[in-house]
Amino acid sequence: MEQPGPAIAVAGAGLRGSGYAGRIARTGAGRIVAVAEPDPARRARFAAEHGVPPGRAFPGWREMAAAGRVADGVIIATQDAEHAEPAIRFAGLGCHILLEKPMATSEADALRIVDAVEAAGVMLAVCHVLRYTGYTRALRDLIADGRIGTPISVQHLEPVGWWHHAHSYVRGNWRREDESGPMLMTKSCHDIDWLIHVLGEVPARLSSFGRLSHFRPENRPAGAADRCAGCAVEARCPYSATRLYLSCLGDPRREAWPLGAVTDDRTEAGVLRALREGPYGRCVYACDNDVVDHQVVSMEFPSGATGVFTMTAFSPAAQRQTRIFGTSGSLEGDGVRISVRDFVTGELETIEPGDSSDAALDGRHDHADDALADAFAAALATGDAGRLSSGVRESLASHRAVWAAERARLDGTVIALAPDPPVKGPVPP
Image 1 (cartoon, rainbow, N blue to C red):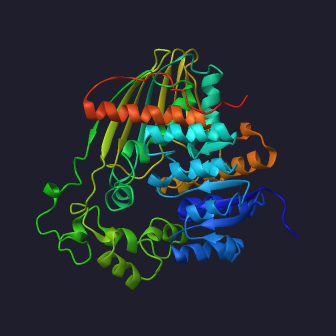
Image 2 (image 1 turned 90 degrees about the vertical axis):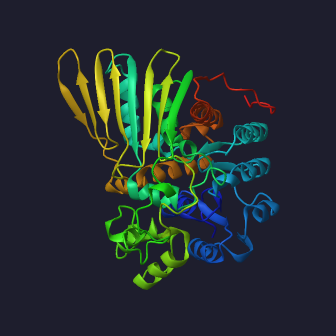
Image 3 (image 1 turned 90 degrees about the horizontal axis):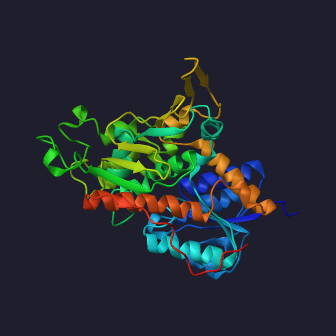
């Protein structure tokens, strides 16, 4: 007998798509009925895990879309440059959509998505996973309840981590702007969106500074080889691929990520082979990367509040860190706990929402991913878009702030962010 719950298809069965699908399957909140994945081995594993029949396991999202509306909703977790077209196509088929961030690699494509979604009357949630944690809810409620008075200034830090940056943004899929997008979008749109969500307003003006400073050929150590395996200076290099990936062996979580991006062979010989032959074994000073390795964004909000966001590769891999200064108190948060200082009493209160884990310290955000998957399945089951923390318009607004900040960095200007432009399709009541 067919299991209850909404039918869900997955376009892109990598780490993100598989993670969301796995959560929905484990909880029984929905049925995974189709998959589109170009890698045959990955597609076969996913289909076997979820009992997807051969006729519903497609080599790509285009083939899945050509089959018609195979599910109530679709999780789109393809590569960044292939977010807009499947989102538009599946919206046209009447599918509700969970779309991995960024929603698109250009503002024009984001507007096309909004147009398609609103014309079709379907729900779309971009994977702004930081919105879905108990930590975020608690911090946002503290501000809304007036615990620090009126927010006046904000400092927010994203410590990417030296090895995480080398893995994803020097050697990995997000190393080049022309293949994915600028670092501020592919990594830190989470953070700009989170600040907007927490403060309840979109920046009115933005400026930004940053560049690719370190991971460049001129910083290559004397005697370094093109690959870490066999390199004479590898043992002294902080960015040794050999050290990083061999240390993952025996740890199931780290074998899934980051090692899963490097090889499926979980042996020392298999890892070393991948490092000799594949992109993840390259010297970080001999790659074709061009995204920044550090960046700051300064923001002025309509209320007059100001904010500064800092992203850096040169840190331990850690939770985001936030300080918000208000007229009658201040708070500090590290993704796990929030400390609130009351200016009247001088008292310091510490709040631990309790849904964080050490997983987030290695670049993962498991609890938030699970909460987002739960919310999407519930929205599909009930037809209630209120189960989702953001709609397509909210995502458009935060993405436009990111694009504006990146233009400000490139042009050396201060950008005034205009109101959201209209789209062509009718807006459902």
